[in-house]
Length: 194
Figure (tube, helix red, strand yellow):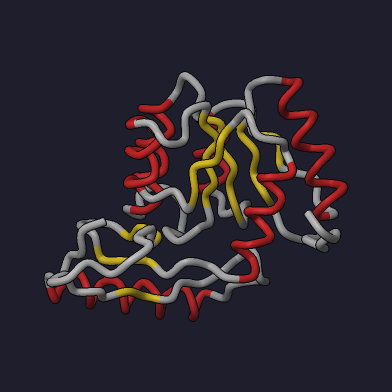
């Protein structure tokens, strides 16, 4: 990361069961972003924090828990957990190009990062999401971040700008407007392949 960012007041939830990796990520986020992550030691604690609307972003380690993490991300995007289906979500995985990681990405993660990378990669990606959040695309019954690098011929590209909690507080009106646009796009029946 080139220069420190100030994420003061932004609640970044961190689910990292390994105490050593948690500590490393904690030190990095404090140093690079001036924020101490919310320590979420179980997926149940993650769900509780989401339901209570205590987080502005979420970082999850999927190592060995791919199915549970994928289900959690999908439930978030479908609006089953918490009030904000557009919450930024990063997932750490030891094989980010593999099928389990791809399934997590398709469930709605903003990014799947290599868990073996330096912790600075997480801080860099959070800073990048703060600066430029991906639009969400109509891809079925729930919103997912746009991951395509090029437009595919013959596919509609109905997308919606979503609130970015990393850039500052999101009021209920902005969130409701994004949800209303999303619902209208789903009613149009214009899913887009990813």
